[in-house]
Length: 69
Image (cartoon, rainbow, N blue to C red; front, side):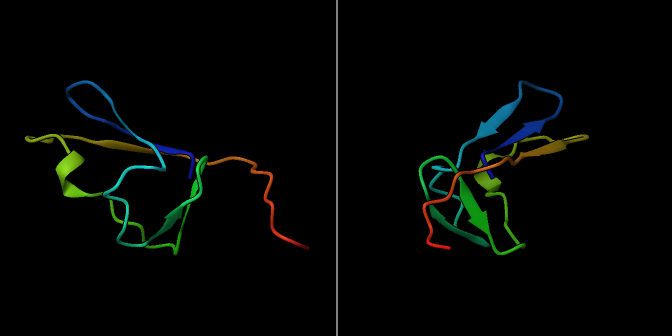
């Protein structure tokens, strides 16, 4: 993922791949992106206090990987 955006009643909250709370279900930050194992958990400390409806946008995209073929 390149970033996660949480949209609710208040201002949108953007979480980048370098967020220190992205540990449960996420691999290490690779600078411009971060991989998940398919079970990434958004850390509760970034969620708004009183949440009504919440939209979660996960921005992904083409990444030029430096891994050997």
